[in-house]
Amino acid sequence: MDLSHGIAANRGQFVQFLLQVFFVGALVGMTRTVLPALSESDFGLAAGAFTTLASFVVIFGVIKATLNLLAGRFSDRYGRKRVLVAGWLFAIPVPFLLLIADSWGWVLLATAFLGINQGLAWSMALNSKLDLTHAHQRGLVNGANEFAGYGGVAVAGYLAAIAAEQLGAREGLFWFGLAVIILALALAIWMARDTLPWAHAQQKAQQRTRGNGNGNGTDPARSSGLGFFLHATWGNRSLLAINQAGLVEKFTDTIIWLFVPILLVTRGADLVTAGFLVGIYGVVWGAGQLITGPASDKLGRRGLITWGMWLCGAGIIAIVLTHSVWAWGLALAVTGVGMAMLYPTLGAAVADHCEPVERAGVLGVYRFWRDFGYAVAALALGVTASLSGGIEAGFWLVGAAMAASGTWVAMRLKSPAPDT
Image (cartoon, rainbow, N blue to C red; front, side):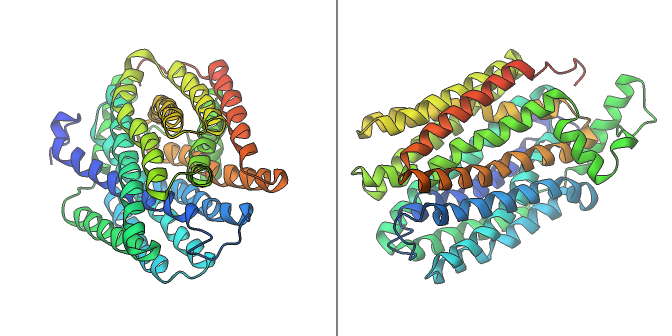
């Protein structure tokens, strides 16, 4: 087996895993515009039930975060491909549950399976690409990965809104989701290769370079599950800064998922227009990462993360302060630029601070905290909206959180060691 590393040497498989993450993004993207905007009319949710509305994002975040944590360890034991395929098998109930949904409880059950799919399949699509490529390509890999994933989110959000308008909410989501799952599962089974051998080869090469070829790259003190989790959470101040930024940046994504479609519709936009506007955020975020990911390899991680957090906060506040389609589009584009700056750079920064054989596990811990941010943000936004009697206060909460988190990164994130 040829275990050469690099994007060029593994072009075919690299593209396969980009397609996988595109489909993962598409499956969640189909829910982003449709479910919040139609929660009352089609799924029986009471008007003004902000905390109940937030419940599906809470469930998604908790389950995805937990599966992120487990996926890295599972893949080290059973291989990346098996975990990827398992992720798509768990997605199969999603469109069927949304089709028969006549209450919000069915939506929550579908969301649980969606979270499992996201936690397993997205994690493996990213880890597999990192296994195949060089250390100096981490920013590019993360940028391409997030471009594919959030390109899928943006495209699916718009197309699902059209399908819901033409076929009805449940029917539109059913046919769109079923097509995505069947295609992605087929490609995962018949086209994707297991990349764990590439990770082992990279670890051996790095040990030879460092002159410790007999080691396994893992600190025995961190070999236990709890010890590893604690190390990867706050083993050094850089990992802690990265993990908190990952959690807080989900405040931005959650409010765009949860409240922005409602805000736009209540201020006069129709469902398709709202889907298009939210899609601007996803497209700018996704496409921008093709630039910001590689740029972080050359310019460093800290500045891009810090300014990205601050831009997101400013963009979210601008959304609630404006009342026209053009202004909303501009504010969402600015928010997308901020996410493009910070998102792939955070993932690359995690990889800078761990050994190759630990990478899937350390990334799993980071992705646990990052996606746990969905639950924290949804609860915070739901409670804030309930206490204030409206969703506007949540936008100010997110703006403040992003500003504070970006400042933490500016003060605490170190540059990586030169041999990583």
